[in-house]
Image: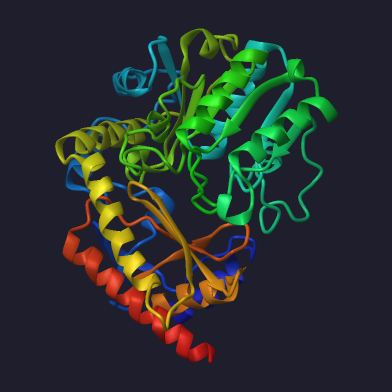
Length: 427
């Protein structure tokens, strides 16, 4: 079996809308390394788009999953419940910031988590409206596409989207949008578009994922919390990409020192197994009537077992501390690279813990062409990289937090050499 023949089979069997960032097919993986079907090794700086904070096939996760599979794989929690669902909810309720008692609902995908958070917000407040942020990504269902603040490729040809969704700019200081600009735009929405008393929730990523790894400061989040309190609006922190030690805290919202009303989680929650959830204040979570929440695969016993293991690994292997060290190590390397006279193409470098990104520029303008070339050429050189951002010029680094420093350095060596190669090719 080879990558070329599998690519041909894929093209014949799978819709083109299910695009892939690479044209190699995985055969096996361990921690932060992956081998394709032709036996070639790659360093994984993508982590399954932030799913693998604990790495590929972490031994603790795999052991818990194997143990669960020997007992049962599915009952449908709404038919016959099981302890792991309850235990995981209890642990996440304790992790979520703030003194208010919490409850947690489990689902399967991040989009489901966001959909259910909006359902719960509307049930609790009796209001229809939702405010999201430009550049944000919340999923590919109809409602979550409406919330998502990026048109290409997520929204093209799929409308109309649900009503009562409004967008305001996310702070991006290096692109001319200050935090005050963002808050002013929010107030303008309240004056020009919708009465704040019709808004059920504001949903925000503490660090935008697909939007480009822009970081909302603690001061901004605190002001947003105050605005929500003023108008009786619920604040939802979308932690699907930022959660579970990626930013140096178990949940990124902890950096802000506020208590959100709900938190959506998925991705690295279960270390590579499908599981998502909504953590929220207990009285809010209880708003829907019995039967109003759930799903056939929601809270899979295999996913719950994996997630319990992930929480253990975060504690025992001190992944929050490792995320901070990873950020410092990688940003130092990127900063040194950006200062070289012959490579002035690296613009803004930003990170919160191990959620790291840098922009590629051509003069003062974003350079998406170089970003795409870098990702393609890096793959040829054995490094899996992803771009992101509304300008398409941001490179994100989501290497598993369990990766050894030597492997991280090796990956950065490949990145540096590949960037130099792309610049030569562009001349």
